[in-house]
Length: 193
Ligand code: ZN
Image (cartoon, rainbow, N blue to C red; front, side, top):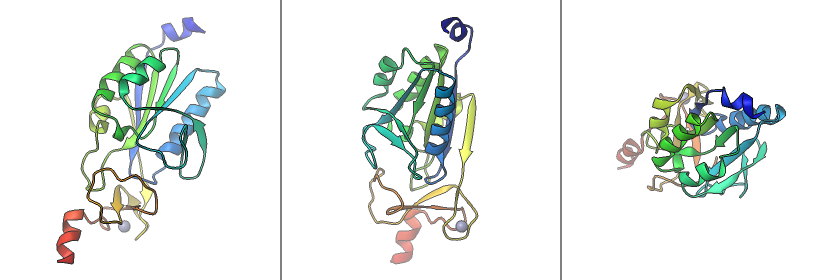
C-alpha cells in the first residue's frame, strides 16, 4: 500500500460550526469510511475535554471511536507518523502550534481531518480554528438548529453565568442559537442591570 500513499497528496479538512451541529458525528463518519478502506487512522483529542469518555471521541448522539488524549499538538506529530488519516476532535482547545503540525502532516501526504468550534460563547474566533480555516483545502461549516425559533444556528449560547472562556459542558450549559436569538454575554449583562 505504501506506493499509493507516496504519490498521493495530503490535505487538511476542517469541520467547524457551533455546538450541537454534528461536527464530531461527521468526523466519526469520515474516519469510519477510511477504516473500511483499511487505511491506518490515528485519532486525537485534547486533554481538557473529558466529558462522556476518556479515550474515545463520542458525539452527542453517542457514536464512538477510539482516540488518544494529548496535551500538546507536538504529541500528535510523533504518534501519527504511521497513519494515512489523522483525525483531531475539539481542536479549538489546542494552542496555535496545531496549525503548523497539521501543515506538516498534510505535507507528509496525510489526510488531516480537524473539527472544532469556530466561535466561543462570546461569538469570538476560537483558538487555532480561524488560522486552520485559512490553510485548509476543504471546509465544512455545520449548523445546529436554534432551540428558540428553529432557524439554522451558528452560535453557541452559554446559559450559565461563568465568565471563563472554557467551561466544558453539553446541553446543561450550552444551547445552539441563530443570529436573531443569540445574545452576546455583554448585552445579557446590561439587560439584567
Ligand atoms: Zn433563533
